[in-house]
Amino acid sequence: MDVEVLAGRDAVHQAIGRELGPGEWFTIDQRSVDGFADVTEDHQWIHVDPERAKSGPFGTTIAHGFLTLSLLPHLANSARRFEGVSMGVNYGLNKVRFPRPVAVGARVRARVTIADATDLEGDGVQVVQRVTVEIEGEDKPAVVADWVTRTYF
View (cartoon, rainbow, N blue to C red):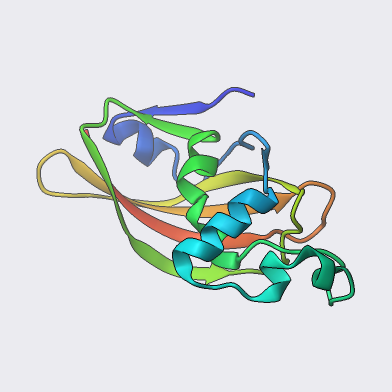
């Protein structure tokens, strides 16, 4: 899969409304889920107890929604890349939904639509990206997020 390269503000503006991707598949494993649980102190059994989770509502352990959300930079970067960047920062999220849980062992990938871009003072651009995280073989996505970043060229 080819990564769409956006080199400079003009390229970002020209990409408004276009879907970029999909990115590369990424496997959610139990080690990552357990590590996220340790870092966030969220050790709910649906995430970290494979034996109990077998008889739970999902039939297996599932990734934390916020774990999947935290993968946006990695997943989006395999669908699109900003080139010539001196600095990029997260500015926030306008809207986030978790339509479907991600089972441990599942593969996810991102599709990115540049929803909006606003020039900032200097050489920056504020970009609103609609990121849809797909689950291989599922009809509903894991995450749909309007992610706001500030990118400086």
